[in-house]
Length: 146
Image (cartoon, rainbow, N blue to C red):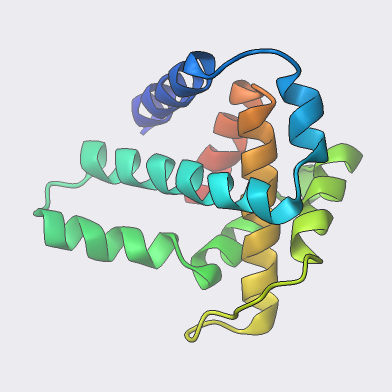
């Protein structure tokens, strides 16, 4: 499992390095929370899918079903509760920005609480990703997906 997280962390870092540099950290802090959640959702999904592909001996449909259990509001909310006590003030602030954002929709198979918690987690993941905090991102993702 350790190797899968390292591989995904390296992929995530390579993708971000390919983006134009500049004032990325400042821009990430100024992005709307839901924009951070938008990219955070994809980064979360990449970690889950990489883990499943490297760990599970399954067909694509089975991998999809396993992924869907983790990349959903309920699964992400459960993951957030694992890492919540470990977040520093900055990370908690980013999470709360996402959690408290005005959501135009609600997932039909999730409670509003889980949906908001998941959005906050995705916002934090997007923020860490865009700020190049790969080590911290991988550390948190390991705990979430244990």
